Length: 211
Image (tube, rainbow, N blue to C red; front, side, top):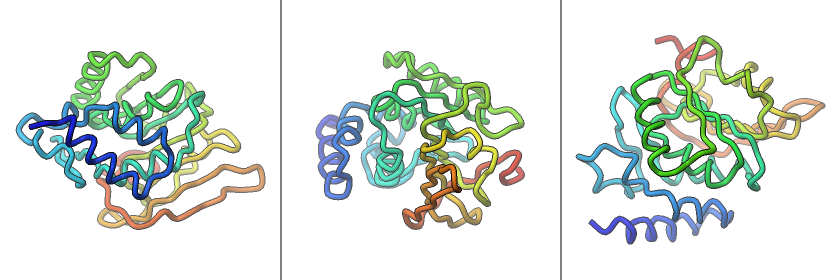
């Protein structure tokens, strides 16, 4: 399969909705086929989520693009990702921001992503296995936070890790259906924008869903 051609076609499709040229260039640069299991690699550029094992998925490219563009990254930011998964989103963020801190609760996925991202030459990504608390408080506050699993409500713990003026994108709702929310932290309170319906695997842990 010609993955380079498939990637170009995907980017052309995303460009009908995504106006941020930096985001489109990141999608053109990152080989998505390397972040999916080898037995379904031919589906890497289909616009749908794909299983990566352990009950987890690599999200639909269109949703990934919407979430990434909503962060409004310019290149100098420190970004927190909740849910490393395959590492694909982290790679996109690494193309767009200065430093990425990514948290994954499944140790096997964290290690596989760490290995692949290192092999691809990314040096601005740190990954750790999630602890009891949501996020990565040690390096807070962050310019942007992206949550790639569904929360039952907006997490105050994550909002506190966001700089004033920073943006967070998070799916909030039930285990089966959510709304994608963009939160901008303000001194006077959070500004919330609804980016539309979505469906993610559940965010598991403290201040989220139980196992």
